[in-house]
Structures are given as structure tokens and as C-alpha cells.
Amino acid sequence: MEIIVQPTPEDASLIAARHVARLVREKPDAVLGLATGATPLTLYRELVRMHREEELDFSGVTTFNLDEYVGLAPDHPASYHTFMREHFFAHVNIDPGRIHIPDGLTSDVPAFCRAYEDAIKAAGGIDLQVLGIGTDGHIGFNEPSSSLASRTRIKTLTPRTRRDNVAAFGTQEQVPIHVITMGVGTIMDAREVLLLAFGIKKSAAIAAAVEGPVTSMSPASILQMHPVARCIVDVTAASRLARTGYYRWVYQQKPDWQKL
Ligand code: GLP
Image (cartoon, rainbow, N blue to C red; front, side, top):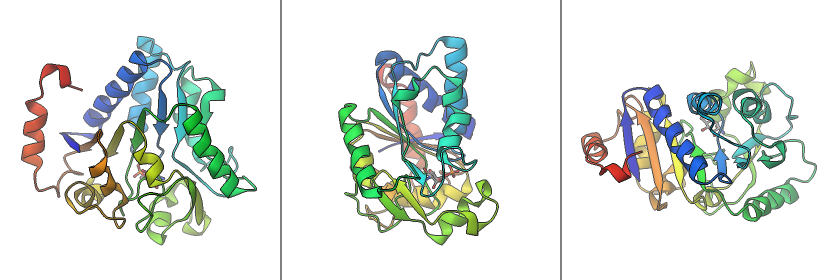
């Protein structure tokens, strides 16, 4: 895994945005895997700016979001459909027919999950998956103990994750218990993965994922087995890593052709 440590979340997000934009310019029909949460907000804001000011064209891009809460309608204020619309899709020229987000209201969850996997395959697979990380090391909504080979399916949130996500809902009781999420195996099939993490509250999860053993107790740790995984963190999220000096050195020494 490549670890890129940046002074601030803003610096980290701008590097991530540049990287996503480069892919979209090189491959106008790129398939992007997208994440929600506070972490990718600046990345989306910057992509929107590039669309408005630098003609970054999303008309041929296909997207698959990682997850959605079971029971929430697409127009529910806390749904990930709403999040993506408000922070990204409404502001770029993406074709609505190419947007995929799990359906929290599906009446047949297993059939829906199979169809979601089929749709990813039919689109040619995900070129670049953007990820955040939960304080317990989850990616998507794959909580600790998730099978590292799992596919899109229903999951039950831990009390901790429901607490972490309370802001969008008001009270913890209102946070749904169930979600539909791409599996860890689904995420691992992406040709490239970009994990973003900011803030001291992510430092333990990042240390476990990057320098700990590969284990389902830290689902993000499986990214150590991914051939093209990058982890872009700010200094506070990096603060519990043992080898930060080396990661910085690697980044500084990059040959020009390899710079992000
Ligand atoms: C939720 C989402 C994840 C996200 C995580 C962290 O659990 N399902 O995709 O990475 O929250 O959220 P935040 O970026 O707000 O810290």
C-alpha cells in the first residue's frame, strides 16, 4: 500500500481529486466507485470545481456507490442517495442513467444485491474505488468480522458505527440497523483503490489497517493485499503510524512520471 501523508485534509483531498480527474480525462467512460461521509466532501467539491472551471467531463462516467441504509427512501434527508445528489451529482454533467446506489427500499435484498454485482460486472468493473474508513476499520459498511471475500449484501451496523453516524439522523435510535453494502471482495475487485482518512479519530483505524495484520477485525487491512491501493491521510490520521518518516521519504523521492 502506498501511504501519502499530507499536512491537512484539504491538501490530501486535492491530491485525490487530481488523481480522479486524471483518470476521467484519460478514460472518459471510467467506472468510479464512490463513498459517502464527511471524508470525501472536499474531494467532491474540488471535482465539481474542475467540472465548472476546467471542463472536467463526467458525461461518460459510470458510478457505483458503496452502500445505503435499509429502509430509507432515496429522498430521505439522511440517505446516501440524498448525500450524493447534494454534494456531487447535482453539480456535474453525469448521466443519471449511469448512477448506481444500493436501493434501501428494495423488497428483495438478496436479489437486489446479486443484480448490483451483475451491474458492476456489466459496466466492466470498477476502475477506481474511493473509500473512507470507519473508526472501527470498516470500509463501505463492512464491519469487523465481515468476510474478507464478501460480496454486496445486507449487514448489521455495530452500536459504535450507529453512534458515529448519528449526526445525519438526530438520535441513535433513528440510525437504521441494517444497510446494503458492497462486500470486501467487491471492493478488492476494483482495479485501483483510494482510501482517505482525516482526523485523530481515524488514527487507530489507520494504524491497524496499514501496519497491523490482515484481519477481518480491521476490514480495511485487506487493502494490504490490493495491487494498487493508496491511502491518503492528513498528519493527525497518520499520528499512530510507526513508519511515517519512510512514507514521506517515498513520496518525496517519486520519479516525475509517478507523481500524483
Ligand atoms: C460510513 C460510510 C463509510 C464511511 C464512514 C466514515 O460508515 N458507510 O463509507 O467511510 O462512514 O465516515 P466519515 O467520512 O464521515 O468519517
